[in-house]
Amino acid sequence: MRRSFVAIACAALLSVTAFPAAAGGKTDPRQTAMDAAVAAGIPGMVAVADDFRGVSGVASIERPGKPDASGRWRVASVSKVFVATLVLQLAAEKRVGLDEPVQRHLPGLLPYPEPITVRQLLQHTSGLPRDLLPEDSWATGPEVDTERFQHFDSDDQIRLSTKKQPLVFKPGTNWAYSNTGYNVLGLLVEKLTRKPLERVLDERIARPLHLRDTSLPRDFPFLIGPAARGYEQLYDAPRGLTDVTTYNYSRYFGAGGVVSSGADLNRFFEALLGGRLLPADLLAQMKKTVPAGGMEYGLGLMKLNLKSAGICAEDITIWGHGGDLPGFNTLSFRDDAGKNISTLATVDLTASPDASLKRQLPMISEFCAPVLPAPATARAPVPSL
Image (tube, rainbow, N blue to C red; front, side):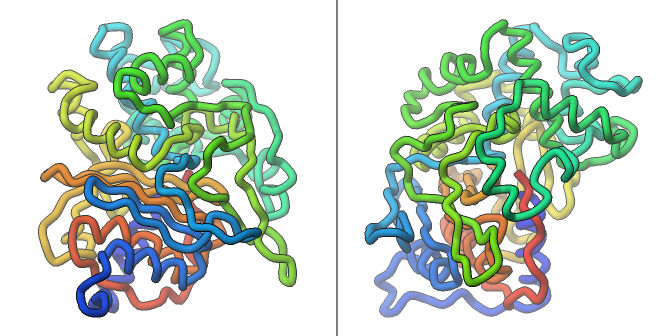
């Protein structure tokens, strides 16, 4: 996910034109941006802010009908913020130390002799491999289709990822995004609480905040009450888009398995960044960032300065996370003034470079009048879950 922001920032710095204003000034800029993304090839978009609930395109390419702004979708790596919050809550209760080795609680799980701390896992400075090797996951587009019902136990992805790959770097010496690390954190929550991660999420976050659309379905493959169907171009033409809405994402139970809605995501970030879920000292630690390839990363939290990124003229910092899964691209962010927005785009991995950039503009339009990068000349990078 982080690399999408890098792409838009670099493109903006190289060639910038003003984002087109709505005719007569009557159309909301977030709506205008969504319509532009749909025109660029995204089947459907949803954007939910405090003062805006907008949709564009279609909910399904098989039948007429707009997306549902109140519906649910797979939020992918935005799940990491939920898991990080749970870990930090347990740290506040003195059930785990952020700077103690995770091996102390999960002995034998990782094959490396180097101690890896909980903080390093939260901040992606652990050096753990990013993900599974292609031989154990998706190596081709068609495999994204055919492997949709594959079951993973809580530790399967971790063991498959780590037994075949060395550490990317010595723990604590660099930054590299790791889904494997967040699956370890999910397992840590389960070990410390002696409860399934989905139950802990419900008891500690979803129920207290009345997040009725938020859950961790694990092996359950169906998306109930979807905002829209998710699609990818997994096969060569003339075959069209493949519906990837129904999927078992147990392989990413701690890294990207949460289902939620725009309203729930906004409520969650409002509570988290407003200090309702963590003590002030741990929230401050969560927001202490390290450089992360064009942005900054805290403990499960992305930080982006829109002016430094070349996206906005104003000096605006936003906090949140992005997420990518087949068929579902999510952006959920909040600025220091308290403005929230969460967006969904219903093609992710195979979106064109133009569509990959334009699907970010509805989110950015919440905070400023964005610039529109010139069309990218290279395909958008493989998205980060």
